[in-house]
Length: 509
Image 1 (cartoon, rainbow, N blue to C red):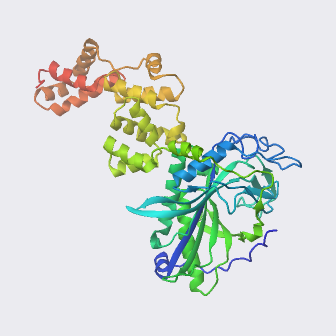
Image 2: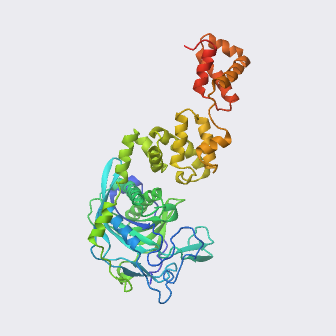
Image 3: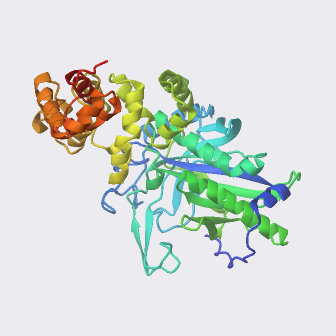
């Protein structure tokens, strides 16, 4: 029932962004699809675990075999209500599922069970910060639905169906619970439109993660954004024709896709061409969009109430119980932690960029000083994560283990160099920090007699340096300390060695 593919696009080039903003007002609408972190699918008991072998997590229900009947997932309804409440939405006292009819090879039933005019949550908002300015993004609705399967197009250069030799279908994702969050039209953002889009999706991702309703992994498709954009002549209240850039899967790409569409549509309108209402694909490598298919209207989908599922009427008492479980808003929490830890805005942004705020907080709660926890996660452990090509969260060290290493440094059992070796041992799976220390023989050499022997040997090997120190050149002591550290394989307390050298040479003060 799909409309035929659009004719090849007439290439008009791009308009300068500043000129486009001067001549046109952008209007956005953002649709974010969130895969819920339930154990089973929306209407059956199949697993939702990501990464399984293709077509191993399927059953008659999600394959739409004759006679199979759906059963609503209560946890998915609870998660949807939680999302709605966190977005300041009204929760419907009564709603129902609908059939959205369309044919795609990755939708076995040839229809999707979704919600149409009776969503579970509606009329909300989310405030986002853009360059110090608060922008309120109004939420039209948050509704429940099921995900589709996944097509893999083999051959060709783009990974898309055009030019592919053949396609493979994996139905593991078919039936995974989704909540689609749809904004009302976003007006008045002008040149900040791309930044507002990015800030909104980022804030939404943070909020959903704090609710523990999804892992919001954009790289795995757990969070996907469809960016709708239209242009209207500056000051004209009539909205233009919109395009919908589908399944944008990173914050940076959301911003780039909106910016590109502003310059593309501006050039077409300036050339006297019309904008086709269509879906578009975003190319990560070029930062451009390309035509997809003509965009259907609601009438094309022939919505009607799902006859195999009863309406949903959440008990008001249950809704209030869910409301009571809502966590502290992530941006409020971040402001509190930043003040408590004494961080600058730049330091906090660095922690956010590294996704290290939760790790630092857990390390502090385990007993570490905030400055030490931040330093280790953002510096050495950040380097290790980058070298392995993984996120900090998957490193094989816990906040409690790091807090133990930090405590051992504070009490003088370890120095920074040895501490890094201990952490390496933990990351390598050699056990708890104390086990690694014992097994590797790692500890600061603090015995005065052992240090004195190493100091005497270093002084004897460098008599000229010893003489300079006696003559008052205190900076020269660094050469002796370095020799002692080398002799002890970095396990001496450098500060203590420094003091003992000066005492030995009679210039301790």
